[in-house]
Image 1: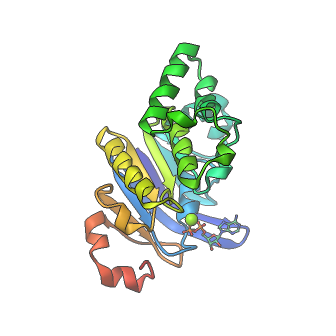
Image 2: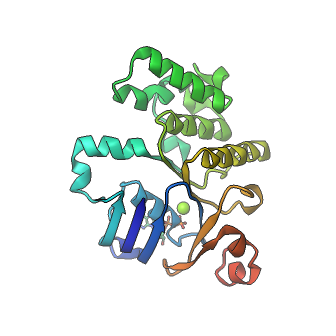
Amino acid sequence: MIKIENVSFAYKNKIALDNVNININEGESIAIIGPNGSGKSTFLKLLNGIIFSNKGKYIFDDTEINEETLKDTKYLKLFHKRLGFVFQNSDTQLFCSTVFEEVSFGLLQMELSEDEVDKRVGDCLSLLNIEKLKDEHPYNLSAGEKKRVALASVLAMNPEVIILDEPMNGIDPKGKRFLNELLAALNKSGKTIICATHDFEYVEGIFNRAIAFSEDHKIARDDKYENIINDKDFLRSYNII
Ligand SMILES: Nc1ncnc2c1ncn2[C@@H]1O[C@H](COP(=O)(O)OP(=O)(O)O)[C@@H](O)[C@H]1O
Ligand SMILES: [Mg+2]
């Protein structure tokens, strides 16, 4: 489904991804791990078409994703419908004046009836347990509530691939357990999950694979999640724990 071939990316002259190769199949659940600054967020932004590689190729279901392909607004819409991105900082994602508007925003871009939009928004608010917040201004919510709203707005689009950048950051333990169960359930229902994380105590049971980036922005290891997480020598030597 996703092919990353010899991809490198630099911000001006600061390298952030160095010759990365990854294949991701539909239905996988992948943890992206690595020390701060290793390139996790950059990799997720690239997957989501926010930035484009300087070298190498990103292929999504037979289409090469680059500035040219995403200039086609019809394809761009389809691409964003299939891939949903939950940003690390919810404030960069939430811009509507109520939670209800926030979750319906993407749906209104699709040609759905008002009833269909209301139904989908209602389902997502209830899935995330935030029905009571529907008339609140997202700005006034707690970090955990904001994260739920951001997730609801992504899930409303029913994407096949859900990409999350450190979703457990700044969330209380109860919120983390809720997210854990939700992500595991979404993967079970067939969604592909790609998630940058370092909250290892709270992500148990979500992932079947981990990709570890190193401080020099290369892939240090791509293996079963359990194999990597139980290899403390590896995690220590790459400054991941
Ligand atoms: N907007 C930016 N401009 C310049 N350098 C950046 C920018 N974003 C990230 N970087 C640099 O790119 C590298 C990878 O960053 P990032 O992908 O954010 O790592 P991680 O998410 O693993 O902490 C780091 O060296 C970081 O300082
Ligand atoms: Mg990051």
